[in-house]
Length: 272
Image (cartoon, rainbow, N blue to C red; front, side):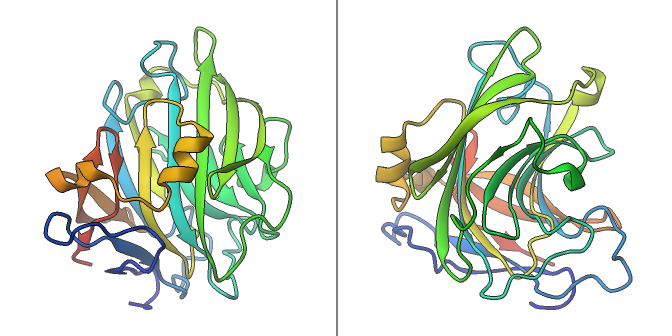
């Protein structure tokens, strides 16, 4: 499991109710290796879970839209940082939880991350060394502690004809900790034809589970009341597929179970 670059899967240790095991498959944590990839310290990406989608697909929500049914996004997940965080020297000390990328070049549109000091950040644009700019939304330090499971949430509601302006709110354990406005980098429609959400990379020693995506703004009450509750729609066991991508751009197929339109709850099985 802890070989360089590996992502393993173990039955979840998070606080989420696993539900009736006769109806719901066990939830698993995605466990990111604490060992760095040897000989690739300058690589743009390390291992990440990759959800690929086309323009107009169910996951194409939030930024770069003006249609009423696509301008809203709520993202939530559980994350466990290691007791002694390990920072990738190529990422400016950011633990990149979820990143939306455009086109096959992997250029970043926005990144939800945790900084070295435990602050939760929504960063816009490609350059992770420019974190802290006017278009970032950042909590105070210490809201994400090492060695503890945290429920993290983000809501996004885009404005304007091109959908590059957005109001953002960040949540920890269902409570809003900061809100602000951002502007996403301008990109051509051609570059948006193929997109992806990356879970990771640069999550050395982390565990992630219960990633949920909603094409709506979930209220603070929704996030707080349901953060430890499994989704009943997981009982339908619809499937989606995602991949593990490494620095060589090779991919390994992974399965998950769709728990609601535009969301999955981490019931995963991998062959790495």
